[in-house]
Length: 217
Image 1: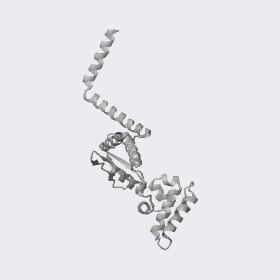
Image 2 (image 1 turned 45 degrees about the horizontal axis):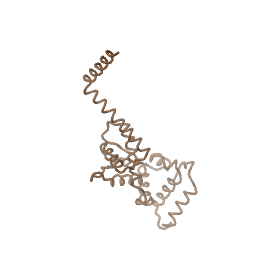
Image 3 (image 1 turned 90 degrees about the horizontal axis):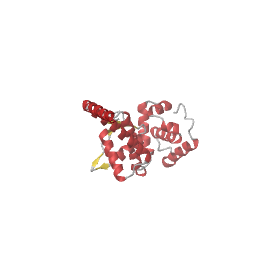
Image 4 (image 1 turned 120 degrees about the vertical axis):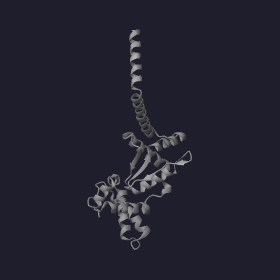
């Protein structure tokens, strides 16, 4: 099934994952699709290189089509993934917010922010965490993109997400720096807009200030 095994794959972890599936279900119950999903799940969990690669690279290594990989990934996530109740909404919320803000800083003029998440289970968990985040009685709008690999947020939602964390005083130092970067970009945009709108008045004020300073010397 796999063309090029990742060099860092842990045979021990891979074997433990597969044995766990066999103990729970047995060979007689597992169909071909179930076995393939179990193999994918075991490979992802036993190799950091494979886990962090994107879905296109996964499909290439497994020698299957991209559509086939997405089907397997979805099946593995729903069948063998972590229990949703065991995953922290707060952690996913902060992580997703950090990614979204960084993308906003790169393209501040965009009305939407697309957070690409290749892992099917992680994308579902992040979507759940964002949808549960209520601010002033309203939930944050989250949409699945047409590609099925990204979450789409309105830029205006970022401020609401930041407001939620600020009000609850749960902003970590790393995330705080990301937020400060966003605020810096917004201040520069506001300053440039002001200069563009009031360029004549601003330059007149600057010249007047320079003349006044020269007269004092």
